[in-house]
Structure formats: structure tokens, C-alpha cells
Image 1 (cartoon, helix red, strand yellow):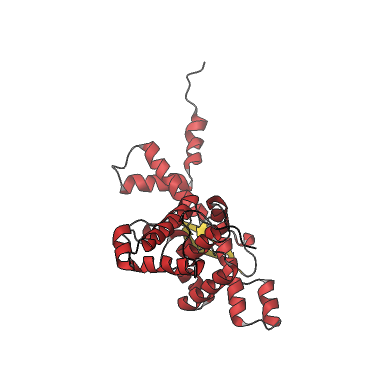
Image 2 (image 1 turned 120 degrees about the vertical axis):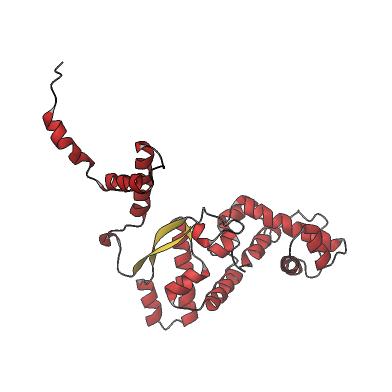
Length: 270
């Protein structure tokens, strides 16, 4: 085996290290000399490149009417005292304007109906790409007020008995409340199981079980003669939340009251 130095490799091998990753690694090592050795430095550079690549879309991958939007990942639930800037982000491509939108305009559909269709579409597209839009996101995208968006989506959910996947319904952010009502109605009125409800409402089974359990506890306290303040103290929640579940109870059982077993769903209605 020859021990002669390989002058070709010595001259040209460094060309392989003239990459963006190498430049990032060198800058990291320079700015943070105590961060670790060569392996850690290159790992940090690779992680930075992964983030950059996730936000880099070629123009030929976007079509007319589409927009690139940065939303909060649906796998990043909020934590107590956590700022929104600490949440995991995910870039998504949304159909801001489609041929169906133009057809609806030409057919003279009411503005509120056209807005409803776009809101539902944008929320579903973001969810399918692993992210959740908030009412603020939708307000910026569609140049509409946040209150109007909340009103339109709430009316849609009440009418269709389905939850639109957005940050308020998925992660209990803000004052979105319709999903609690929908979940309880699907279980107690239609007799659906939590796993089926979770699929239909874009919730986890754990979240569905939590809402149903809280509803059952509020109804039990009501049957024991507790008022809203006493129920809130027993369950360690706000009176506002108790009133929301009491309103659902009134809707489910306006005349006959709650069943003997508060966890037993009603028979499926036709």
C-alpha cells in the first residue's frame, strides 16, 4: 500500500465542503464557540436548513390564486403562559381564490354564503397539511373582521352540526364554544361513540372524552340541586363554562330532564 501523499485529494477535496451547511456550521462555531464539537455544530446547521427548506417553495409549485401561509401546527397545543411565538409553525399552501369562487360571484350568491364556503375550504386545507388557522389568520387572508368570521363559522357549525377545524375548536384557544355543543349532541342525541365523534369533529379521542366527562359532571351536579356557582366550585372551573354546559343540557333535555345514568347516550334519532 502506497504511503505517498495524495496531492490531488489534498487540493480538490476541500471543494466538497463549500456548501451552505458548511458555511452555517462555521458561523455557528464562530459565534457560539462553546456549543460543542464539529458533530454538534453540523447538526445545528442541518436543523436550520430543514426549517429554511420547509418555508421555501418554488414558484412553479404554486398556482394562480394560491398563497403560502405560515400557520400553527396542529400538533402544537398551547401551554399555560406560553406565547404564540413559542408554538411550532408549519407553512401551508391555501387556495385563496378558485374558479368555484368566481362562479359563485357570477351566480350572484350572497356575500355571506361565498365567505362561508371560502372559510370552510381554507380551514380544511390547512388541517390536511398539518396546521390550524385561527380567526385572526382568516381575517387577514380574507380582509374581513374577526367577529364576522366567528359569526359565519358558528352559524355554519350550528346548521351542519359539524366542527370546522381551526385553532379555536381544536386547541381551546379563544372563545370558540360550538365544538363542545356538537360533541355532546353527537354522543347523547345520535348515540355516536367517542372515536367516531373524534373523526367527524377533527378532535382527539382524549379531547372528546374530556368534554363528555365534564358535561356529565355538570348535569350530575344540577340533578343534585347545585346552582352554577356551586357547580363551578365543585368542578374547579369557571361559572361561564358551567353555564355553557347547562345550555347544552337544556337543549338536549328541554322537558324530561337528564336520564338516570348521565353517561348513557340517548337512542339514535332519525
